[in-house]
Length: 339
Ligand SMILES: NC(=O)c1ccc[n+]([C@@H]2O[C@H](COP(=O)([O-])OP(=O)(O)OC[C@H]3O[C@@H](n4cnc5c(N)ncnc54)[C@H](OP(=O)(O)O)[C@@H]3O)[C@@H](O)[C@H]2O)c1
Image 1 (cartoon, rainbow, N blue to C red):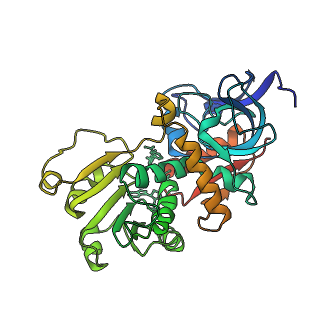
Image 2 (tube, rainbow, N blue to C red):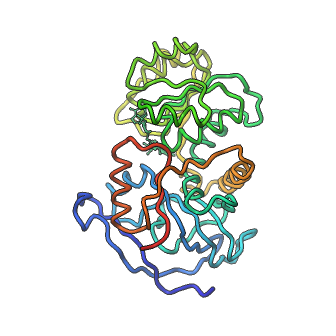
Image 3 (cartoon, rainbow, N blue to C red):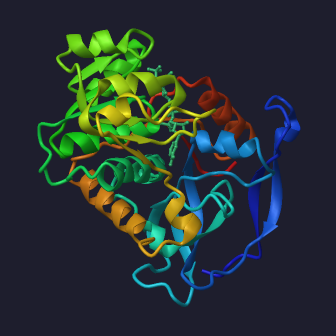
């Protein structure tokens, strides 16, 4: 198919309140043909993420960091991806996002979308898959093949987008998983994904963890506020245990105390690190998504797609931002098709 000259995109403006109609508006932008390792994708569905709301506060941008769509054209260096392929990806925080009818993406960080689930369920997966996978397997060093079977993992924020994938990946690796959730629907969601126990992050977690048989855990994946759980994580981590963080703290945190006494390993995960710095192992993100497609097709992983907010347009994206900011979403919110 011929590359069109222009595309429709939704532009969010920084510093404009969400209830102001100028917060998000349609724009007509030029389409740039793909060069190098890039492919041009015709976007079919996008998913919402907290990073949309965080970037919105800093600059005017075409947001969207999760998409499924069809490859329209490929750059000269691209191997293994062809026009017509149905793909999914998170993309890069330093480039135009997926809230546009067309998007350039580096072919090394995308993969063929899982077959048979449709674009909405596929778009729900990439960003949280990369975050959860890199957190557990790359940063905490958990063996996906089962060498760490029986060890314990606390997932803080179990029903969120990232937690929902992490619970499933950890169960594939054979871990005993305790997830936090504060409401009946989010607790039930975590159990349905395989969590062995659910504790309420609004209650006393030390008491609940002990009652559930886990006074300490080998691993902690904190997918929510880092500061809020700092003291608690130091108390709960087992000697020589490991924890991974994904949320920027709001202030300085004391590194010593229990963390030092226990020789705990503290790791950071930022899923945009590889695309942002163009690291040598950039293509690992494509490999992770390809493996995820196989696991979804084999029924080992369930898409965390929870609700379709309708077509991709300013009004529905603004509603998506509102819902993310509530902090009470379960699984993933998706928008599909164009208005
Ligand atoms: N570093 C990275 O690469 C990276 C990647 C992805 C996300 N993130 C960040 O990680 C955070 C989570 O992302 P997400 O997509 O999983 O978010 P999300 O889907 O918006 O998370 C919603 C969930 O958060 C839970 N929650 C609300 N308040 C909580 C609290 N005080 N303690 C524990 N859980 C709480 C809620 O559970 P209940 O309803 O049960 O309370 C809800 O199910 C965001 O800040 C996001 O920006 C970072």
